[in-house]
Image (tube, rainbow, N blue to C red; front, side, top):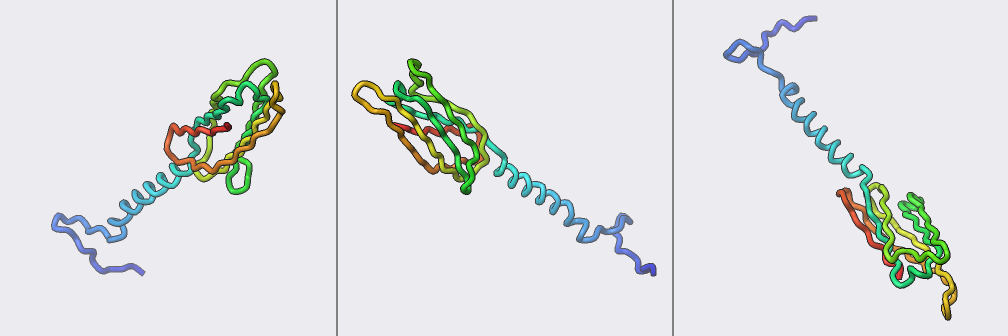
Length: 142
């Protein structure tokens, strides 16, 4: 069944666009902008983590660090420092994480030295990784 009603025309003789066609382009643009905003917040970012061993650096034997998000270990990492070669006071590490709230758990094992006994220092800290670039996080293990 064909609709024989004449379409409303502009004075130039071109048919007038329907409201749906006029609304389609702005809706597509807004959808694209919304998707870009959403994905930019969930895109992983590079984070430089500085582990500050402080005065414990000469006695450090190992360092184990894990980033926990929503109960799941996301990025475990560990280093060992050989006897006779003291660890640097500040140890840098670059990693890629998704933006969000993390619990950083660090375990620093120290060797016995002189009158000091071997010990283990544990640090737990809650950090927020934002969606911006070039983030630095300093974790003091003193």
